[in-house]
Length: 144
Image 1 (spheres, one colour):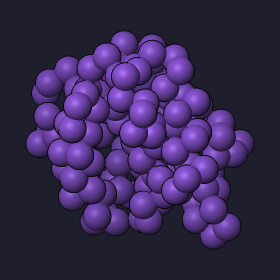
Image 2: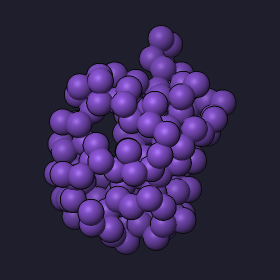
Image 3: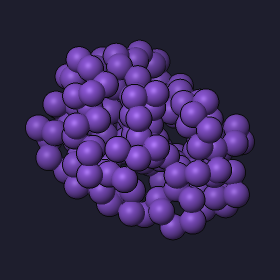
């Protein structure tokens, strides 16, 4: 597994009250792990205003706007379980937050690999219900 995803990047059983809190938590983890500058979080919130990052299957992939690229230090992914769910849009509950920061165009490749894993609802539920970070990392072993 590359430094794009490691056990420091995974939060089990998070509780958030709303979409903004969910995005801020995701961004904070990207900042803490050295992938982005703190201003990237505001760009993630801006991005959400433009187009929802809710992908279906209980998954949201918060990420920054196009002009946020200058705030990305290196490519990385963070994964946050929200078993209780958080509403991203009416009737759209998110139980899995995957924050991404991509250097250059790397985010497109990361997104497509994540999309493949998350396109199967059983994978998503396996990640949401995982009891360890290792279990979660196993789902993403091809994402590097």
